Each structure stands twice: as structure tokens, then as C-alpha cells.
Image (cartoon, rainbow, N blue to C red; front, side, top):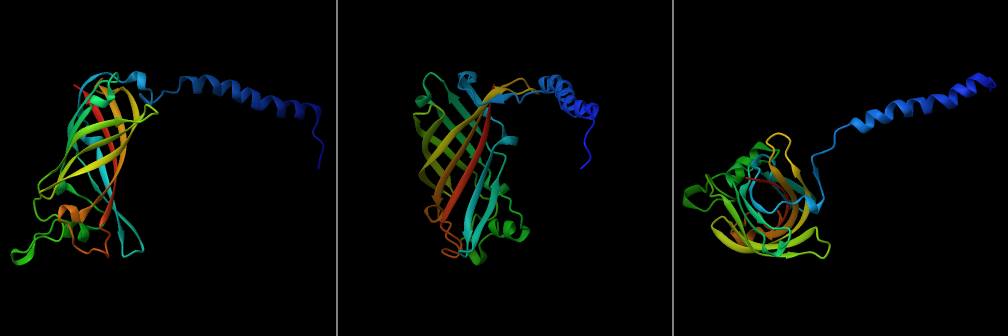
Amino acid sequence: MPKLSRMSRALALALPLALAAVAAPMVAQMPEAPGKADKSRVVAGNYTADAGHSLVAWRVNHFGFNDYFGLFGDVTGTLQIDPANPAAAKVSVTIPVGKVVTVNQALTAHLLKPGADGKPADFFGAAPADATFVSTSVAPGADGSSARITGDLTLNGVTRPVTIDATFAGAGTNPFNKAATLGFHGTATIKRSDFNVKYGIPFVSDEVKLDITAAFEKK
């Protein structure tokens, strides 16, 4: 290989340093996300769910081959929280079952199909009632950023206790409406047969895994 001249070697060493010097101010000026997983940012008070950014994903196993996903959106509700007493927090949400979506139009239609000849629907049926979850207790985790939220889930006309493993995701100020905002992620597992949704068991699993993401804005 040809040898580099003394000037070429100097340029090869200087160029990365020059680029770093130019890039450093640009990086410093880049905006940060308004929310951070910083508990000191949590403001006590009453919050309302940001329906456009609060979702419940559900997951079932299909025929023992693989899992299938669906989604409930437009979740509404309220949160009362005081960072000085997280165990006293209360949450109540409403989930519009009739707005369920999947990637398959035929399956989505089947989920909302009414029962034939007066029989119960296979799944939710036409114009199903909204589901609700109302907390009954909150057990904060030792890490200060998680909690087990137990409450009553009402779905398909049946109410059962359900526990959500929740994690604090972030807090800050929404840059558009200037509202103090909190975000959480959560997971839970239910049996759909407990809510009289029994079609296809065991070919479609009785166990339903829920993946929850919710944002709440202080009003």
C-alpha cells in the first residue's frame, strides 16, 4: 500500500477532530423529549386520560402455532395521584370495546358480529357495552417506580377482579397544551371465559395477555 505523506497523515488526524468540534454545538442544541422517568416531576392532583395516546393491546394464541394481536383505543378515564402517598392513588378508565381493531377485516367483523337466531354472540356482538376498570387498591413497588394495581374489570356484562403490573414511564409538560402529563405502562393476564367470551377455546387460547399504555393530563 502507498505510504501517506506527512501532510496526509496530519489531515487524517485533524479531520475527525474538526468534525467533532462542529457537531458538538449542534448536538447540544438538539431538543429533548418533554417527558422523563423522573419521579420528582410528578405533580399531585387529578388527571384525565389522553384518549389519543392511551391504548390496550390484547394477545391470544391461535391454534398453538403463534400469537395474534388486537387493539382497543380511545381509552378515557381519570387518575388521582399524590407522589407523597402513591398507595392512595385511584384510577378509573373506560375502554370502548366496539372500537376494537385487528389487521384482518373479517376477524374484526367477527368480533362484533351479533349472535344468529337469538344465540349469544361468538365474541362481543354488535354494539357491545364499553369495558371499565376501577381500581380498588394500589401496592407500590420497592423500586418506587412500579405498582400492582388491583381493581374491578367489567367486560361483556361480567365484573371480575384483575391485577395490573404497572410501571411509571415518564412525567413532564405537554409542549402543545402545556398540561402536566404522566405516562404509565402496564401488563395483565385475564381469562376470557371468565367474561363469557368462550368461542373457539382451546383453539384460540382462553388466556388473554394485555399490554397497556396510558397517558394522563392534569386539568
